[in-house]
Length: 515
Image 1 (cartoon, helix red, strand yellow):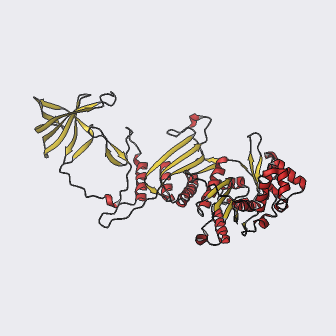
Image 2 (cartoon, one colour; image 1 turned 135 degrees about the vertical axis):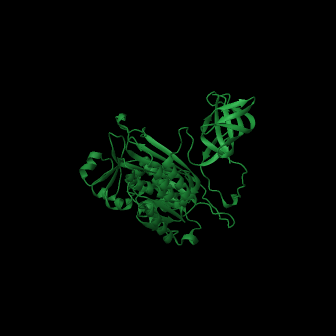
Image 3 (tube, rainbow, N blue to C red; image 1 turned 30 degrees about the vertical axis):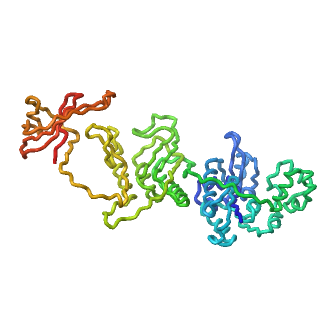
């Protein structure tokens, strides 16, 4: 058995679904018109049943539609239709792994072997219809023993249709021949013969039909009889998980965006769940309405036509609440030079996180709560300092011999198996940030006095020197230093310190104190 999922007046449904949460009610009850074509000559390309009752016809201009009154007018957006068709495919794939993308708004699926999982054909059809409605569609569902019989039943009949095996011709008999994929000249010929329905076409003699219309006519007759047997052309799964929303009127306040953000992230998380995936990276693009006078921009505002930002999460997640909180904390730090007219959010798919706790290791912080806490810290102290070094993260030593060279990487939630006890360190160098400027007096080749804490401290013992340098090929990054470890006599007793001379400028510094 094969099923067809068809969304009638697909352009209208896609336009409504992109803007309204109650798209089904609006499609069924309110006149809806979609305009397409050049901006200076927009014409009607799609309309729903209430619009037909209101007198709307194909090809009418925008002015003519407005004169009808009470009609909801939308401009055709290809991106909205692409996203809506992707949702239809996702709906079909939740019932069968073999799905064909037949045309925009129409998909076919193979139901072979699903009876034990979902039930009889009538039950499966109701479940598919319910799932489609949950995704914002008013759909016709048809089930038949071959794909084309299911296709034309879904296009020709509203609601749910189940064609019994062997009686496909009877089910299709009352449909008009204009549903068939016939060239205009063939339809004109059939109209001249007085052939109006599938039944009329199916009863024509095959030999005479072939003599007049050739193999094309014979193939069309077999379609009208429901006798064409073929396999599906399965579509590949989409690798992109993107949700977007375009405002009718650009918005300026974050409070106005929170509801839309939550709605988009909920749809994104649902799509990931249906594919048994999670996301480890979130990408946000905000299209801005460019102002004519750029001098009106607030100080520190983000200009340009769009704002882009991405979050590389240390863990895969499907929780839209966590994603929403991270996004909100980032936007609270931003000031935009222009109102926002469009939002686009993309989740990079990955396998979900699978972990198991360890009874013999300390519990780790919950990854989601940790990441939200880090986002709040970044909102307080900033993402980077004046030297473009990250302020929040796990320290990592750089692959260089330059002392105190490190960076900060995002925190990673280690598994319980990665836990290992920390070994005690006999000595630790407590760094002074920034290093303390000093002066050093030498006796021969060894230091004798070091100026520290507003006085000259006598060197009791010294170890060194250690010479190091690097990046000599780049004058801007080149460094060279001479290090000594010294024991100084202070009022608190004897302390161990590290001093060094920056040989690029000749200045001495106290780098830190040994504990």
